[in-house]
Image (cartoon, rainbow, N blue to C red; front, side, top):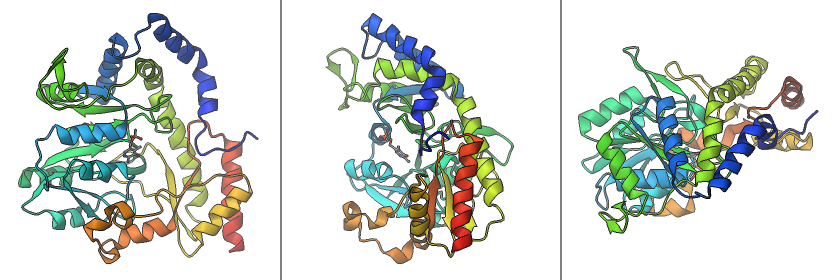
Length: 377
Ligand SMILES: *Cc1c(COP(=O)(O)O)cnc(C)c1O
C-alpha cells in the first residue's frame, strides 16, 4: 500500500507531470517572472470558472483578505464580524488593519458562522461581515447577505477552503463560493483544493470599479508606472505559479470529484458507528471537502489520533484552539461561555486524510483502524 498522507501532492504531480513541466519550462524560457500575459490568462480563466466578473491574482490568501479590507474605506475601530472557528489569517488581517474583530460562535454541524450569533453581534459600529466557507462548504450566505443589506454592511468571503463549491439560494439561483459577497478571497497554498507550488491567492469581484481598485492596491497603488494613487502593497502572483495554476484549474472539477468520492467512502463507513459524528452536508451548499472532519462523541479524540499515528495514518486537529482564546486576541477580553459550540468542536474534531489520490485500499485501511479503536474503547 502507498504511504498514507494528509495530502499527497507527489502522487498528484506524477499524474499531470508533462503538462506542469512544460508550463514551468515555458515561463523560464520567456524569462517573464512577474506579471505578464500568463497571469492575465489565469485571472480570466479563474473568473470564467467561477462565473465571476473579475479575478485578481495576488501573493497569498492572507494578502487577499487584507487587500479586500483595504479596498473598503474602513476607519480604525470599525467592527468586522467573523467566526471563532477558522484559520488565524481571517481575524489577523482585521486586527492588522486597525479594525475591531467581533468574533462569533459557529454551528456544530457544518462548522460555519452561526446566523443567530451573527445577528446578535451587529452594532452601530459594524461595517462588515467576513464569513468563512470552512472545510469546503459554504456558510449560509442568503441570511448573511440579507442582514448585510438591511444593516448596510460589506460582505467579504474567506473562500480559501471552498473553491468550486456551489451555494443554492431559496429562489433556485446557484452561485459559486467567493462570488456572493462584495469581494471573495482565496488561497492557492499548496495543500488547498486549487494549490500552486508555492504561495498564491486571488480576489474575486463582480464590480469593474472594485476590480480596478484591487489590482491597483496589490501593485503599490499604481496604474501608471511610478505614479501612485493610493497606499498599496506588493502582493503579486509569480508568473510560474500562474502557469502551474492554469494547468491545475483544468483539473479542479476532477480533483473535487475525487475528494467527494473519498468523503462518500468515509460517510458510508462511519454513518452508523456510535461515537463518530460524520460531517453534516448542508442542504444549500455542495461540499468540496478541503477537509473531512469528524467529531468524536464519548471517545477520546486525542487517543484516537495517537492510535492512528501508531498505524502510520496521519490525522490533524483543525483547529485545536478557538480564536477567542488565542494569546494574540486576549486583549479582546472574550469569555469561553459565549462560544459554547466552538469550545466543544475544538475539543472533539479530527480531520482524516483527504486528497485527490486516496485509493480504496488506503481508505479501507483508515476506516478499519478507526473502527478497531472505537470497538476497543
Ligand atoms: C489557508 C487559509 C487562509 C490563508 O491563506 P494563505 O494563502 O496561506 O495566506 C485564510 N483563511 C483560511 C480559512 C485558510 O484556510
